Picture 1 (cartoon, rainbow, N blue to C red):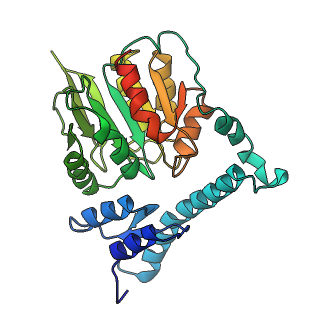
Picture 2 (picture 1 turned 180 degrees about the vertical axis):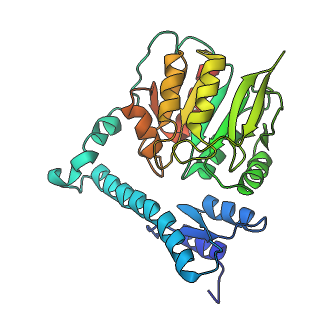
Amino acid sequence: MPDMNGIEVLTELEKSAFSGAVIMVSTYTEKGAPLTLKALELGAFDFILKPSLSSMEANLAILRERFLPMAEALAQRKKINRLLLGNVEQDEKGPLAHFQDVISRPSDISIKGNAITTTPQIIAIGVSTGGPKALAEIIPKFPRRLLVPIVIVQHMPQEFTAEFARNLNAKSRLTVKEAENGEALHAGTVYIAPGGRQLRVVQAVSEKIIQVTDDPPANGCKPSVDYCFRSIAKLYGSKAMGIVLTGMGRDGAVGAQVMKSYGARIMVQDETTSVVFGMPKAVIDAGAADLVCPLHKMSDEIDHALNG
């Protein structure tokens, strides 16, 4: 790219009517993290870490393994967009046909037990592909005096989450930080799970604290939404709110079910505003979603939950 770098290309594409998708291949370095996050802010679909094995064949095999799920997600999104526009024939819809029910009921809410009447004491958010941009829309809208802590599991490699937390902190009135092992939860603080580690919330002697562990991946994810959500369900019960945003895969579906079984309220991002509908859809399919909500209304719904 002799005339422009990747960020400059994305900036120009954002100004144009370009309707394709950009996947960034990023270096696994401290310098690479802010550039990658900037690319995601500018609309890149996702990023792949550049492998550094000794042979070109091995590197290509890793790139192929990481790229194919993204290509499949992009193909699925293209089909869904065509469905929304009414350009898919009936026999093409196949497994996408049930999305029409979700699309036609944007305010579909099912209220069970005390999930709608108990004020949450913690908000737990799980997100993957499309997450940096989604969180950058939600978190800065919260007031400085938010009365609960927020715990976020964003699928992201080690080294990237610290920079992501600094980036989001600079845009927000809340304190946003990468979570540290053993620190107490405080209202008005957003804790982002460190990349390559697992995060859970546990009861210490007199306060609730974060534990960062090297436990195995769940759903192939580390950090894992399911891992985090299960700990919050057991500790907070009905006094928690779980949110699953855009992302590939099914991470968060089991955790949301566990939270729901304890009486917590579960909200997911709708298909129209999701970059990838995989994670929210998995929660809906599991019967755990109380509310399916477009991204731009999500902060209002959270505020409504916190203020009755």
